[in-house]
Amino acid sequence: MAIAINRVTNANIYVNGNNLLGRAEEVTLPDVKMKFTDHKALGMIGTMEFPSGVEKLEAKIKWNSWYTDVWQQVSNPYNAVQLMVRCSVETYSSVGRISEQPLVTFLVGQFKNIPLGTYKQHDNAEYESMMSVTACKQIINGVTVLEYDALSNIFRSNGVDLLAQYKINTGA
Image 1 (tube, helix red, strand yellow):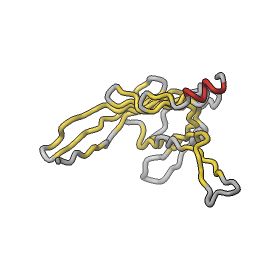
Image 2 (cartoon, helix red, strand yellow; image 1 turned 180 degrees about the vertical axis):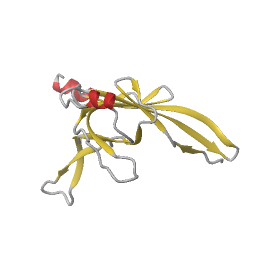
Image 3 (cartoon, one colour; image 1 turned 90 degrees about the horizontal axis):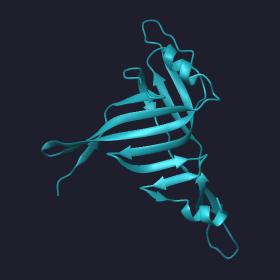
Image 4 (cartoon, helix red, strand yellow; image 1 turned 120 degrees about the horizontal axis):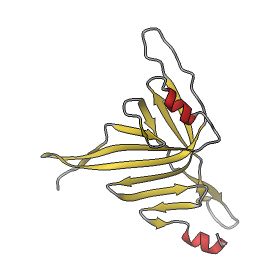
């Protein structure tokens, strides 16, 4: 059996649909981290934990310079911003690159800070923004693998609504 290795080595970001090619040095997308609650009861020998929700999501962007047009879009913490990160997943085997697929991540949220910069002599200034994320969606080659929206009670994995029965039970 041949081994196939996936690699993602670059990306591009868009803010509210505007291409920001070459403006961000690094993007850290949020982890969708489940919140677990302990369960212990008389007669049980141990304590277990069960999923009870999703932790808050946060993204980070390290900009490579000051960009007025970007700061004008992200500087109001009361307005939601749409962030899109696009990259190419390359698959390699013993014969070389065998495929390339687009991976697109959509985020919606508010920027929590407006960096004024870190300046050092002879070094490029650094600007790092944090974004509170309320919704995310990740699509590989046209297939949605994850969709989460805290304000709309959406949580889908591989097209399966993980909250379907909960919504029926609660009348949501």
